[in-house]
Image (tube, rainbow, N blue to C red; front, side, top):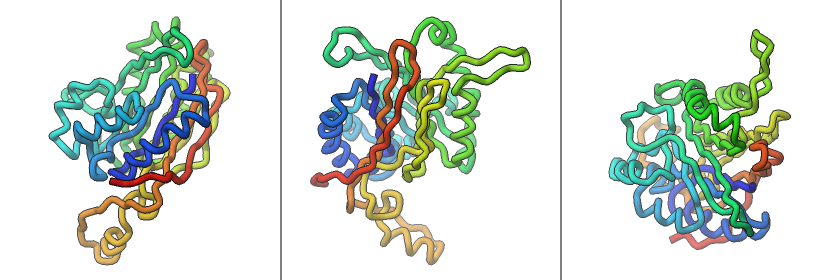
Length: 286
């Protein structure tokens, strides 16, 4: 199974880069079984709308994850409730709109055999809004599906939307399996991939743990890289010089796509490879 995960899509430049890059990447990697993208900044740089959601699905995305900015446009809340393929972090209270996980199913490329992928969205707490514990939310998700995880090899992909590198890596070690309990029991690998989002800066620490979990601290950002993490520098610099608030404008120059390609053995649910994508995109920005 080959999965493409696209880092935070920022505004129109990000959406244009995504739509233009997907066909080329699909040809280069001989197709993707699933394409997942973080969408929390896709509408005007903050939040989502129904029209943006439909456009991203039309471009070839199968599911979307998000983070703290998914709440910035409350007009999207009904869509978040109605469309299970668009996620909000699972460790927000259950009363919040939307869901934190989804089970995707598609026919394998060139075959009528179905492939399945669980996608779970979590949000960190370090330098972030105070919400429920992501470690416990992940454990709750896995415990609810314990029999499935023991008897079925369905892969689990987690987008951990968090600020702190340490928190992301700690969750990876917590979930990757292989730890020995005080009773001498070894925990099984329960997650196929954990990818970080939120900082908009791609890290170069991609790896596959021996237990079979792919990992990267941050996938990065898809959008205009000619500014400051997706925002025009002409707006950001005065804010730092004066300390006064300013309305951010999405940067449209130097569009790039940041993503990772994850290879998973669908017979075991173990990841066997992860490759970074960080390249310019020739696209027209509407």
